Image (cartoon, rainbow, N blue to C red; front, side, top):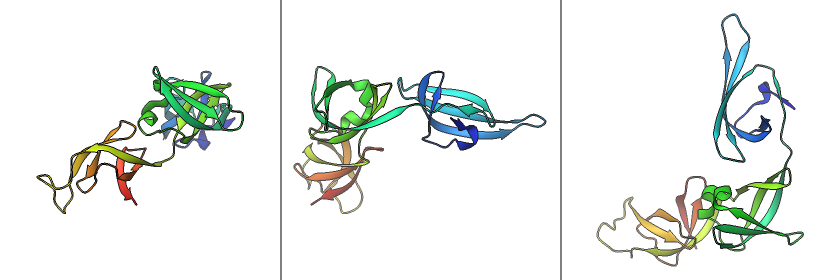
Length: 187
């Protein structure tokens, strides 16, 4: 159990028998009454945003979460299959469980899958991934300048991001998976 004084962004708590992650919180001191903590949480199971006000010093349960390293194998019929690297057990996850991560995972990538009560909840992918550019306009087209500018590029996973004009098909680039932005070309 944790106290409301231990709240911080990203902390996982159990709220109404649901595992949640704290998105934002604010300690508020009310005139003659006690202090309260206004909290905005994201349900790890459904992705819904919940708001609740706790009394200051209130004790909250922490969920029993387990994290396993798994390898992404393939996608078939809107399901994404992962394999436990220790037991070789395979599990399917839906596109909703993957969220935006599905745009940046490729075959054989190692990811962390978060479990709650022995059922998979979400997938954590690395912050930076290196992917090949499958399709983009060629360098040297109108508007190609030495100054900043962007063009759309389709990656090997099917995601479309903005890249600088000097990036060509076949180049490998580094991407920030939190924002989906181009970082640099990998040599």
